[in-house]
Image (cartoon, rainbow, N blue to C red; front, side, top):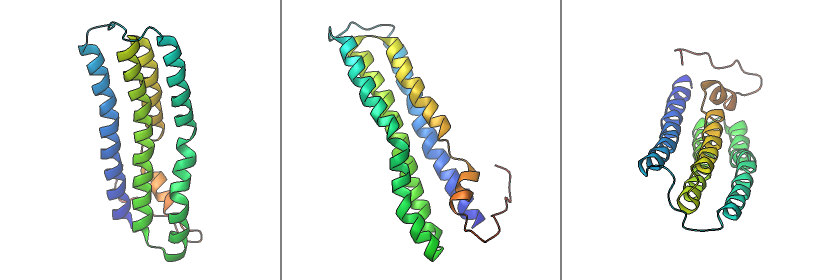
Length: 160
């Protein structure tokens, strides 16, 4: 079981690092464009508030969806003690959460391209990056996910 935890944690970290790297690529794109771009739309502030609302709704619903995605597989794991489906559901829930966080950064990028405001891009991207750091996969969380009441916890065989 310990090897499965290590493999799963490593796989999650690689995928999540790719999502986090994409935020850097978006920042590089904004820097490559060389400062504020000419706004394509004159109603930039109204667009910002609309995107901020969409981002807020997205952020508020990330964890409830994450929990819902794991509820069924957790019940199945509690009965059958087969970790494969639970770990697959955990991977899917994590990828979904990170994709939704990246969507916030994409809203900031689109807002920058349409309204020409680099500061708005920075705020949206910083919120997405903070969310990714908070949800960063940790071995302890995977061990807790696979914990069965009444059994000894999985011991760590190598430092992580």
